[in-house]
Image (cartoon, rainbow, N blue to C red):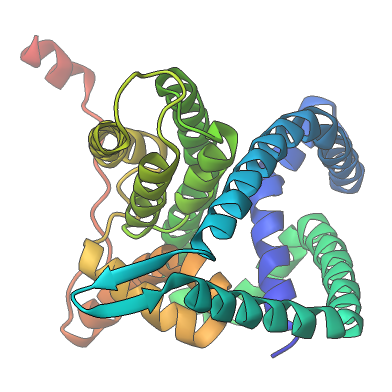
Length: 341
């Protein structure tokens, strides 16, 4: 159970990187091993260079958070000396805030006392990351050998069905992973630009959140909607001269527009319709995936269900003696093309 999540992540990483490795190997006539090493070096340089671009932007975001924290401290000081009269009953707001503060302090003290456990978790994370990188490298390097070994385990009479099933499921996972990465980048850019235009505070942080939530089909939009409304109501706009509640309506309207564009334009064009599932099916799959594999099960719920749908259709067709695969569309002949004209 401990080694399964790193191996799954390694398989995902290998799956995403393999097209780049194959392109470099074919374009420059290199071996698969050399091409894989080059791709990993490029990715390492990318991950090392990204912080130099993102850190200054993050510092600006943190400065804004620091100003808001100062405002929260000032409000807390005011609340400590506030008494609210409800009917004939006085309510000491200061006593309530003191209890909340004491509870928060106790929680933070408990977290500070677990510093050794945090260090151990960080060490475990780095070891898992190393396992993911090494395993993904060998999966890319020897993928042809692995495919051949798996195919030899299939009886000869079923190998053609195996190849077609593997091809169809491969298209599902390819559309999901590569499409989700592109979709997350597009959503991040859109939310960042729109957030800056309308004056939403912390546009970069909220844009990164929106991009990450694209990996949660059907639920990601709702989560960002709630977060965006909270920020709009509490922080307001730095550009638009309107009240916070009106700004929240603006954010809600823009989010609804983006949701329609995302569902009807971006997802069909970027990911395609192979992973298209009913939202209720996706939500149930996310719940089941979370109970079995945590965050990883949530992220992989949609392609897993789509793959099970393919296998279920094949099994159903076999039980009832039906054609398990959709007939391939034949190309029109030259005479048919001339006749259509």
